[in-house]
Length: 69
Image (cartoon, rainbow, N blue to C red; front, side):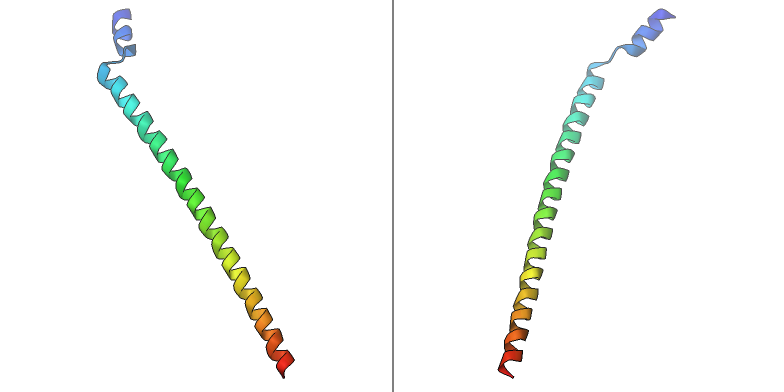
């Protein structure tokens, strides 16, 4: 009985290889996820800045039009 339990606990070479591959895959997925998150933040920040700039530009144009009247 003890021998059967010992056999179940032992990992085969293919089990170990699979664990290593899965670890590398998960690490790669984390890297990709972090990079995508970073790019999304950069894009959002750029869009916010552009929108803010556009709103300020419109406000300046509006003031100038009112001054010309």
